[in-house]
Length: 260
Image (cartoon, rainbow, N blue to C red; front, side):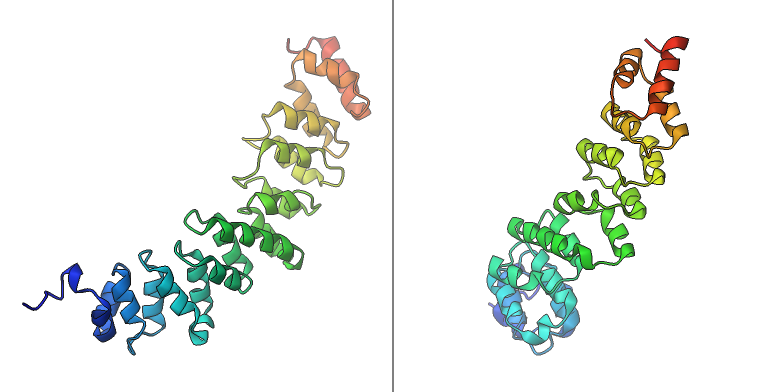
């Protein structure tokens, strides 16, 4: 009895080798590993078919290795990206290809939950290495989604555009925001935006760092003072690191009868 070509059991290596281009395009995203292995020997497999195959998470390590051994295929940036992102990619192959990815692809790999954990970590390290070579605009774009290791470097810049983008990064933690709030070279625009940020501007640790920073705009500092309880005002008055105008403002608030 001849197997029904529509049944999964018929999707073996021989079926992949002789499939028409239309059938390849229909099946490669979901076909089992045997069919995919055969398809790699099919002369009708071109760039479009190959990309469909690489988006199939059922592809085996052996299939992915075969793709990685074809120099012509690896000349395509999208092939390299999909190989590294594939959850079954052999680690040695992923490591070889990471250095050939763009910084945007590295960012994607570093954040992809299905990518190999080692590949994610190496992608993050490569981003750190390449950071200085990126243009200002590229660093601004990166700052919005940078992983923790890269974020730790970005918050130490004095580029206001980058820092404003960093404030919206989901990976930013309170300690990072405090660092930005207290940095001596941070621009007034960044400090003002941080003070009014819906997530960070309400944190007491961030407010305290802003009030100790001489670069915080005076109107911003005075607004923060107006929202402080009396115990925090007392701390500011005796803190030598606090700018004189902030200490004076705190004293006036206490004299006038601040919030308990």
